[in-house]
Image 1 (cartoon, rainbow over the protein chains, first blue to last red):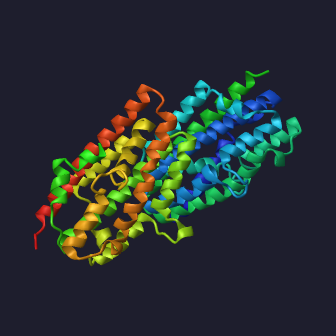
Image 2 (image 1 turned 135 degrees about the horizontal axis):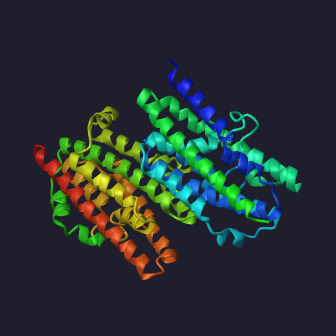
Image 3 (image 1 turned 30 degrees about the vertical axis):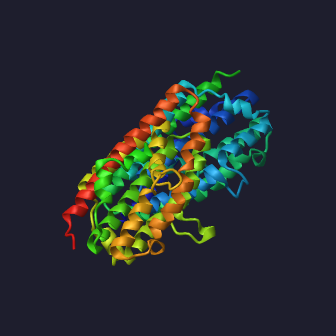
Length: 234
Length: 223
């Protein structure tokens, strides 16, 4: 049996299945208004911050070689992505200008309760699991954003298209979403390479799948929560 | 607090040991495990720190994990293994030799501390670099003192102890991190207490760890 090949196929299927879930369908089906778009962009910056927390925790638990890969990954995210000319949090804030958001709107943003629960859940997975599970949990969110794997486009692409179709804002102007369409494809491929080095046994596969299942469940809950809160905004 | 470490029994025992080649080899290998544990802890600290502090830690980890490529500097794990060559160690020896049992327990304790609130966690990690800063320690940092002992006992000049020499310099710079953070974030009594608690607990683990290293060295033949 091609352990690694089979495992990667399962991961690919899982990220595609996300878009068939009721939570994803609900979230992607909420019609965008300018206010809802603003809410989403601010929340997405908070999501980006939570990713930085989790990747730090994953780096803490991973073997040295994997720590180095994560450090490189975090260089784009945390310090400077040459594709964007800035780090990804700054990119989110900059993107906000297109829809009338100011830096203060990001600084004073509250994390809604259901979103907070998801962020804590991702922290837990990242900090208190075997490193392979933790690593996969964070990786899966980028794999789910990889347009080469997800039929119909990854999450950033689809949300970007909603801004384009429903608010008339071209995807290229939604600079954070646009960069993530490409960046997460690169990131998910680089990070995925490590599976080839470290996944050797059925037990390793199970650790990977455990992380993937848990992260995808939280991701569904998170998207469901965003959909719920967006619907409350008139 | 950092200066007082050197007055503790475990530190005095460790620093009164005489190095032989075998002792230096074992010490060198165990220090590579210590450096690897630092990388674990700093990852966790980076995870829980605010965004601005995460960036500082990311830069700190460039020196440690990657090396300043622009200055032709290697990462600190590679340096530790290369330094082993002057003691007659091959890279294999680092892979074959397990960490000390007592060391493992200390490493777990440091990881646990690194997973606490971020101010405690960052204090716990930075205090070890402050204890290694020649700028702050009256009679020389731990790395400098060990380096001097290896020079005295084995005739290996400090400049050939490439990992020790690097830490003598780098930890002066890295030791500033806590004060940078404290100036901005230690704005309440609670925050200041958290920093002091993290630092104190880490130095306690450090004393236990140095005691285990002293036990290990003492158990090896003197000549």
